[in-house]
Length: 362
Image (cartoon, rainbow, N blue to C red; front, side, top):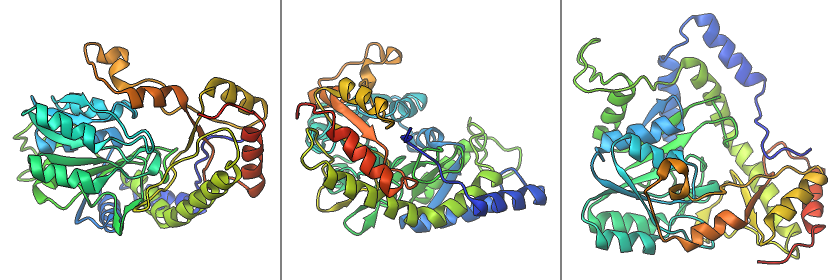
């Protein structure tokens, strides 16, 4: 079976982790600080704060922006952590529809909400599947309506809008280093920002509410959501390898798109001003389940990201949204393997398996 994901951990990562283990300094420390600085530089941001995971990054960012009792507009077509982070910080996620071509949050739908509500504190677009959202429009909306802009960049390490990397465009951005992401620390996350007040707020929240004035000074309530030196050591090596990972993902995606040009599926759309880093290569079909079953029979893994709009989850009972494009996406999208460990033959097998299904075009 060709897997949908295949994390690449090599000798360099093992050596870096062993060095930390031998040092005895395995909790958060200097290695974490070095990783924060290097990742922020990679994103073109002034500041980075490493966290225990991507959800912690989003949650801490929302806490630092003080969204409690306020609305945050976001997409219903994402992993649940996007909306959970808002609720955990005491905010109200408000769901706007997505662009039917890119699956990303639609700025026009967001502006409609901004015109209707006066309690919006922030907008949180997701750079879904590794494709940046329309950040030019979102920056304009952020400035016009005086709301914060949070980039959920959990799937978009190294993606760009024009010549700007994601992670440096909004007021704050959040990344995940889960094993299936474009780079990994096992579990882990990162907040990037140019704002020293946001950085300070995030650092305080992930460190038991300490403000740094004294070891046992806790002026605010917080969590322990720090990253360890062990994870950071792994992440520093993965960050060095990320450009090669990205090049491989993009080449695999190029070959998939080329090979599926005449197949009865819809391949990803990439606007001219954006760079896609293909955390997922997502096609769509109006007979998705038959396609998925057929791929499995031919030894090709696939997965649906995501089968349910967030407001339709049991945990979101009482929430509602008119989001027809997002709803349709949940019924038709299917992600194919695109990870860097695919061989040339693997890509050919994936193309052949999809083409052989003969599913009806959307």
